Amino acid sequence: MDELIERLADKAGLEKAVAGKSVGIILGFLRSEGPQEPVQALIDTIPGAEAAIESANESRGGLGRLMGSGASLMGGGVMAMGARLMGLGLGIADIKKLAHELFHIGREKIGPDRMQAIIAETPGLRQFT
Image (cartoon, rainbow, N blue to C red; front, side, top):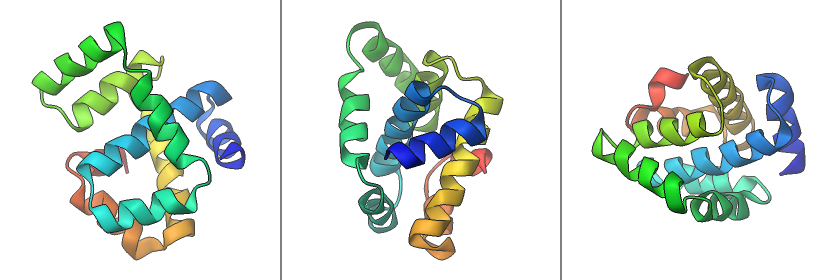
């Protein structure tokens, strides 16, 4: 996971801590909203992904949980993920860079067809490609 976070931080121009939290948020979103088999295949190829998802879910206490609930009421899914990422200080351009690089890594790890299935079958995700 450290190698992945360093790569994402470098390519997206983010601090490592922010990149790490962002990965957990994005993978958690994919797990809940995306196609099960290819998403799980992606998660399985990233050492530490399960811990990152769990950590991202645990950090939704207090105000973060309220903001997440508000985002869910406004549309849920990708809107809630975006709100959580923006809560880390990311702008739309940052989120797009991060997602683009994460999808690139996903293509390397699980192949372009499975990664394309994740992008095509996850509501709202295409806007970040």
